[in-house]
Length: 274
Image: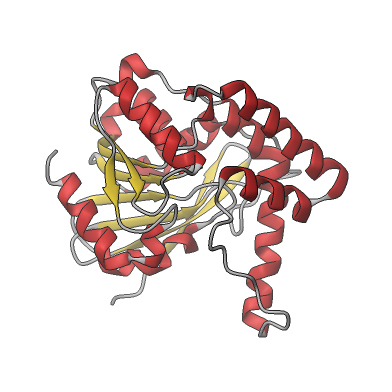
């Protein structure tokens, strides 16, 4: 596998770190929540023999710092960043895979910059406001945020993962990690601070423009092992409003990491229809 081409892009109030790998039509991978481009480490090499794969750290996360203090950041701002990144690396419409909160960014990108998106796979978008029990989830979101403010990252994330069902099978970090892993864990702690403090509420309050998206090239997807979890339920609700059925992908909420080869094959099948 060839080495990725790395770069930085100045955007309003921040600088994005991005990587480009492979050749072929452009494929932008948008991570969710506190994740950065490393979320796609397992799959980008699999995809790079047939796509020009673009991965990046969203603003406020890992290698994409703000110019000054961290700021509360909306889905629309994250989508504007993705728009600027696509414009900087080429002029052709891109295939886009957005996972979790990154799927919300993809939906907003497709809504406001449709000329840049050849097709979008929105994988498990956590659109809790589309659910029948939306009020309960809004209350739960405020509770998680309040827990973060009063008790910190650990208790807040524990509550978030348990109430969404995403704690099922979550690996526990080793008690005495090697230096490289310890450094990555420290970076994730910083990312979680930004996620809970400056992203979480905006993600929970986002709703897409359903009427516009009905005429746009979007496929709503969910993992075969995620049934019953909040993002899976939200994906079903979105698909129903768009008049389609969800497309099932291998694995769970992060199936691209656990099943990269099978996930890539499914992605190719979906994109080949556009």
